[in-house]
Image (cartoon, rainbow, N blue to C red; front, side):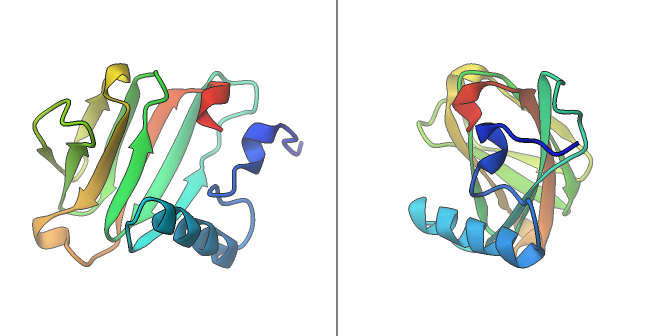
Length: 136
């Protein structure tokens, strides 16, 4: 069953070819003045599930926004990455491969970026959050 909501037409979410995904992220990278962002994939939860999951592939910094909800993420590819708050809501911290980290709802905008041995390599996180219209 194909999804038809406006939520699924977000320009930065992979809906088709890898090329479409990369082009969408290049546009977002320019908006946030970041480079080397590669792709975001919506993973396989059913459209009626209230939790949404996204896989982010990157080689630089990836912008995230909690949209007022808690975000639970896991570093699934890379030796390490750094998580930083745009508003300095917390001290930047390093996560390692297979570690899970939580970004509280009050943080708002933050970034996840490659660090140390992972610099210049393809990294990935999986993020879970409660689906709201603010996430579109």
